[in-house]
Length: 221
Image (cartoon, rainbow, N blue to C red; front, top):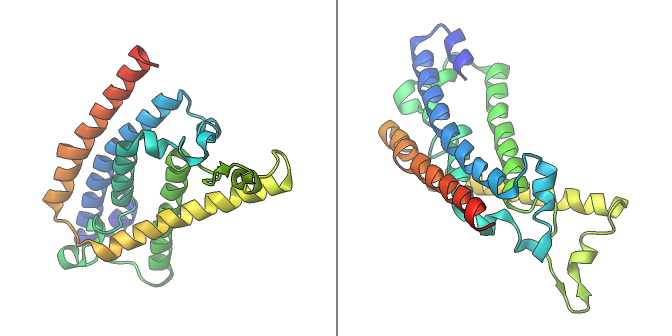
């Protein structure tokens, strides 16, 4: 975004790019701290190991139930990182003509918009793997009705991989749908509200969460 606005040789596009950069830097900090809490609780940076740790208790062992605040911080920061409403300030047409992509049209504009939707998929994949049980089934075994077994398959078989792909993609599409729903529902924030939310609320909350997780690991776990 910064390079795109600067390369336009247009002061309005450059202003939009600078504002976008300040927004992304601000929310990356809160997002990183929220993810550190999950990494600390799982004791690993390996996404596969974090996903495996959520395979117990048929959905109740997912990190979303142990760290709901971390997911809220992550999700709000992800909306800001992907420039989705109500955080689409880099594209605020009423204030910036068109933001960082003012000078782009046709194929170049289409690629910029495609990158935004690719970012939505990326943060959805990360969110699902870290918080929503990754490829693990949400269905339980109830007595003789083995819903979890039927929707998981034997480890190492083709059915196991197909079920894993199905659950992972389904959860990712659910998160993408939530992001689209948020865009339809909430109005755009002002610049001061955008920065205030990050530095006054999300970042301090993420720091407190990280300190709390550290204390739990040291004194209880």
